[in-house]
Image 1 (cartoon, rainbow, N blue to C red):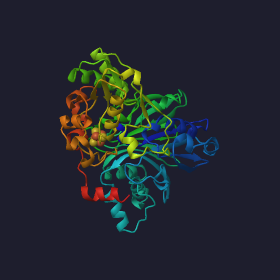
Image 2: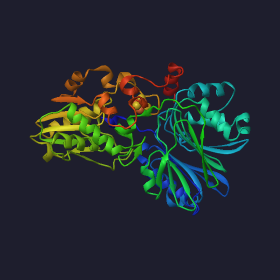
Image 3: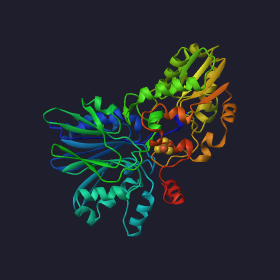
Length: 471
Ligand code: SF4
């Protein structure tokens, strides 16, 4: 179950905030994107014409007490919440990253993962460049600091974005402008928001749910292969790369994004509801109650219930207050089914045939704990339904899946997984079923973690994996 997974990163940026509250609005935007990264948070703002960055480990609310935000009064800012998909969890790797180049200051915030970042970094290191972080994002700044790139101005940003490969949604801030970029495949989302009518404030966010809290409306997306530049009060759209076939990460819909967001043109809640409905048609079962593994399984479970006519109820209660430093259960507690985050509502499951809906199974350990907890609470039958296909391959585009050898579905058949989990039945949504729930063409999504069909080859896979483990 997706408890095994770690999120990608989240970006937010505001330009043209006449009241000086750009950092404050960025804080609110990041707060809405907290589910995309809980290790570190950072804001870079233009204060008196100079960029200032403030980064901290931990959650957004912990990282930015009021007095810290007050020092960042500004009309433009970018922010970042991070989970380390590449590079270790230290303050040096926190973003935005800010550098002084011969052409002036540049700050960057990145969501995604470069598939040739390790090669580009190696080239710089071979010429004596020193890196202060282990994040591939710093490589982008080294590239932007090269004299011929600095001289090229805006075209220099475009040139760098053509040289890097992989998944990247980027926000750049200089003292003059903000630039939002999406890679040519559009792996990760990046949306545009606008507030104000006569004087417009432009904002960018990994997910549209971040616009609500600051009163902005969603005005479309940065397109794959596009660079959107905001300077003064104008917004310009520049195509920096040839259009590749879009390969949006379908896992954003399955698990990562918030249900109130519109991602790749579809509302996440509606997609998950449709996944649950299809799951009920593909894998019906006679049962008394449908429950969800919260929170990411909620919408699909409601869909399953609607389609099957089996009542939905709350079978697990999530404790939202388990911090990162809370003591983990001992191994023997884990095997007894002790779970810090989820508790079974015994009265809902005892003596009943239970359909439990989750979004995915990764390693299988968490799923085992959850179904054992249901059995211990007296469930008569447990039927696990998964609203996506079996995850059989790692992701190289910004999601921190474990290696193939650790993925339970890479090494076991569905029936073997059912036997391992000791449950009465197990059903996964088919690939076709999953892709029928989103509105773009099926070939416009990345499904590599399910199918092994990688849209982009990994430049030097062995070196890449080594570069990740040394971090
Ligand atoms: S491999 Fe899976 S998680 Fe990674 S980008 Fe593709 S669909 Fe998303």
